[in-house]
Structures are given as C-alpha cells and as structure tokens.
Amino acid sequence: MVPLSRWLPGVARIATSLVLIAALIFVALRVAAPYLVSTGLVRTGIENQLSKWTGYHAEIKGTPVLEFWPTPRITLNQITIRQPKGRGDKLLGTIDSLSADFSLIDAIRGSASFHEFHLLRPNLSLTRDQQGLIDWTYAGQLAKAIARARQEGGAEVLDERHDAPIGTITVEDGTFNVADLASGKTYHFEDVSADVSWPRLSSPMTAVLIARTGGEDLKLDFSSRSPLLVFDGKVADIKTSLNSSLMTAEFTGLGSIASLAGVSGNMAVNVPDVPALLTWSGKSIPGVETLRSFSIQGDIFSTGNALRFNNVALGLNGANATGVLDVSLRPNQRSRLGGTLAFDSVNLQPFFDAFALRLAAGEAGAPEDGGSLQNLDVDLRFSTKEMQLPPFRLADVGASIIVSSNEAKFDIGDSQFEGGEMTAHLEAMRGDFDGGGKLQISIRGADFAGLIERLQLKGSWPLATGSLDISLKTGKPIWTARAADVSGQLAFHTNAGSIRGIDVAAIRGRATQQQFFPLSAVSGENFNFNQLDMTATFAGGSAELRGVNIQGPDETLTLSGIIPYESDGLALSGSLQATDDTRAAEFPLLPFFVGGSWLNPVISPVPVINQQATGNSP
View 1 (cartoon, helix red, strand yellow):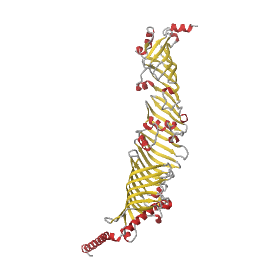
View 2 (tube, one colour; view 1 turned 180 degrees about the vertical axis):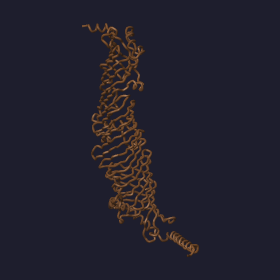
View 3 (cartoon, helix red, strand yellow; view 1 turned 30 degrees about the vertical axis):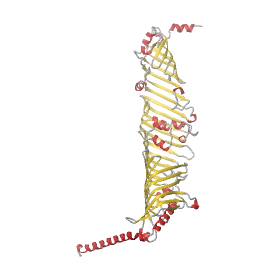
View 4 (cartoon, helix red, strand yellow; view 1 turned 90 degrees about the vertical axis):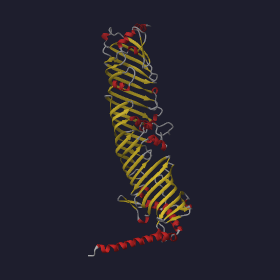
C-alpha cells in the first residue's frame, strides 16, 4: 500500500493549479468583458425583458452604465413603461433608475439574462378591479403565469414553458398609486421600500414592504408557497402581517385577496386607539370615543359569505373575553354579527356606544339609510362575572344585544344586583330617530340602603331591602334625551327599613308651634317603618308621586304631589296618622305641605280645624 504522505502533495498541487486557472479565467473575463459585451445588447435585452414581463412597452432614455466588478451589472436611467400606442398608450409608471445583474457568459454569447433587480424611485399606477384583484394586464409574462398557474394536491403548479427566473427585487423611495374600481377611491403610497425574494415564478415568494400613506408608516410582511394563485384571487397558503402605530394584524393559513370563500387559519388584530384609527381612515362612528382599544385573536374559517371565529380572545378597553363569533357578509343584504362571549369583567358603557344604540339610531347628517353601520345586524349573547354599568355594578350577568334594521335591544336576562336580582330591557328604534326608545328595569330583593350609601346620595332616601320596577320611554334618542324628555312610571316596595332624617315625633311637636319649618330642624331621628309602597309617573321633567304609603309601627306617612327634578324642587302634600285606627286619639291626623328643594325641604302643617272648616263650607 502506498503511504498517504506520498500521494497527498500531488493532489494538493493539482487542486491549487485548478484554483489558479479558475481565478485567471475569472479575472480575464472581467478585464476583457468591456470589449466582449455589447452595451446595446444588454440595454436592449433588459428593455425587452421589462416589456415581456409587464405586457407594456418599456422605453429607456438615459445612457446605460455597465459594471463588471464584483459582478456584471447594468444600470439604466429614465425608464418609462406604457401601453403600446395602438392599445391605448396607458402609462403604467416611470423608474428613475433600474439596476440588474446579468450573466456575463450569456452576454458574450449574444443573449442577456438578468436577476437581482434594484428599482430606484419607481412611480407606478396600478388598478384594483371590481373583484379585488390587481390588473396585471393581458399580455405580460407575469399576467400569463398568473392566469395559467393551477393547484394540484394543495400545491401550485406552473408548466415549464410559462416559468421564468426572477431572483430578488428591491425597491427604494418608490411611489405607488392604486385605483380601486370598487370604491372609486385612489390610494396613494409614498416612501415605498421593498425587498422581494422570488427565485422563479413557480417558487415560493417572501416580501417585506414599508410605505407611508395618509401620514402613517406601514410595514407589510408577506410570504406564500403559491404566490401566483394568491395574485389570481384563488385560495392559497398565506402568511402576512401588517404593522403600524395605529394597528397590528396577522394572518396565517389559507386565504384569498378576492373573496372570503375558503378562508381558514389563525388571525390576530390589535387596535390600541380606535378613535385615532377611524380618524386616519376617514370613518366616523358616533359614540365610539368611549371604545379606546380593541383586539381579537382566534381561529377563522369561512363558509360561503360567512366567517366564523373559534377560540376567540377578545379585548375591549382592557376587558377580556373568550367565545365564538360569526360574521355574515351578504351581497345586497344587511351584514350580521353574532356570537357568544364570556367576560371576566366588562364595562358596558363603550359596548353600548360602539355596538348597540348608535347602530340603531344613525348619526346626525347621515344618509337616509343611516350610513354603512346601519347595514349591520347584531345578535350577541354574553356573560360576565362582573359588569360595570356606571354608576352600578352587577355580577353573574347573562345579557344580549340585538340590532336589526328597525331597532336595537339590550337585555339583561339575569344578574346579581346589590344582593338581589335584576333584569333589564333597553330598546332604541331606528325608525323613530326623532322619537327614541324605552327602558324597563325590574329589581327584586336588592339592598338599596347599601347602594344609596355607596353612591353617597344626599336627602331622605329609604334604607331597606326591596323591589323596584321602572318603565321609561322617550321621544328622543336615549343618549341625547334630557330628563324633561322622559316619561314613564315607577313602583317601589320594601319591607322593614328606615328613612334617615325624618323624626315624626319632632314633626308633631313643631307642628303645634310653627307654621312652617325646615325638615333639617326635625331630623334628629330616623323614621323606622315596616313596609313602604310607592308609585310614581314621570313626564315633562317632573315626577308625580301617587300613593306613597310608609307604614311605621305606630304611625303611617303618606305623600303625593310633584317633584320637578330638573329644578330639584318639591310640591307635596302629606299626612301623619295612626297606623292602627284604634290609636287615632294617640296619633291624630296631621296633614301638611312640603315645599322648598329636595335637599332642604320645608314642612308647613295644615291645622285640622282649617281643613274641617274648608270641607264644611258650601
């Protein structure tokens, strides 16, 4: 056997010689290239390739610049791309400078092939058709490849005769104008930078694009194993994300740029400042100022014109929910949002403003159909462990929001409220934009004493556990209605409790001494009662008390009259009398009037003798 040390030097010498020969050939080609390569050939080649790719006519006005180190590269200036004159002479755009690497061997042999393109300050005008697709023209290599690509076994397939190499494309300081035929708007993108990696038409593609539009910087990341199918509006795998200071959005799965059919995958959207996004986009949703932030993440798939979101994680102003959502987008019909959500805790005020009442009643100055939001139906069911409906708090809530073409309804079907139970129904009628809606609340077994204490209400309120029924309606939109615009009725019932600041013994004592006196002068004790019943009606900015009956162990207090709550006034008549008729001598009838203000009422006793004299007069 020949020792390794004897033949290794020979192999090294041969390898070294081959490397030196290759280096000499490489240097020789670079040195000789300017004499061997025709500038006109390279210029014509890239001009023809641009025309071939776009289907438009490419015209180069500037003088080409050839470089051969470290790689052969051509730079062309003042490029115009437009339709042939016989077919409309439509301008696609201009490019200040275009550079591309080319094959030196092919150029020496009289042909030209290019890769690694760099576009400086391109100004391009594109058209998005009624189907949501970019018009790639009818004759270019790219358009033909898009039209002829097909899907087999979940993969993109393109016949070899339609395939072509591309390489990488970089864009610097570009301007794109996209005319959207469906909306009639033109979207302007400036300061465009892009890096596209697309080895061949049949290869996967990745792209990163940074642009500025409407004063906002955007970054778009896109990748797909089937880019030709994507550009043709077919369903294909997509991974894309959009990032800006106003919102972030991501999608991974199967999707289409033309329709929702066949969409499936995972998506996430986060909007940290909803009003700022709407202002930037030129949209307006009245009342949405209370909805500050919004986010949604989950699995998404489509059936027909409907989207379903499973495993949803929803965020509203910091409140988090899980559940499912359905969105139906029906052509020439009202769209629909439905689903079921479970919150840990939620403030319902922004939910009201953004998704319910405003949708039903439209906005000032809106078109007769109420604007685009008026075309959305809502059917949401949700539950929450804790709900804030300022200034109230509810627990273990089951509720729903329903919005149709004529009305919006919010229902609390079940909830825990101040130790008791509450149900509620709020309704706004779109057909009655000038004449509003109604509110119904039913409370059973609630601790009103604790509620009044927590809300720090001033005045003589009943402190007891009881039941309350309220039915109100207004002739104006609920969120703009003043107290004077509300009418309705109230019924209140409690068992044992007290009313602070009413000392009935002191009232009787003062009644024998003074013609009138403030309630504060006789507020040393509370009035304890066994039962309270009250009914009232509301209209014209006043509450009319009817049949207020407060039964104490010894005496019963009755009240009736008017409380003009807009002015905090009082105009009541009342009486104190024995609860048990057999004790009438011990607690004789004491009629009186109550006037002044709610926080500082004044009592004016009515002598019984005067009342009897008046009753006996002819």
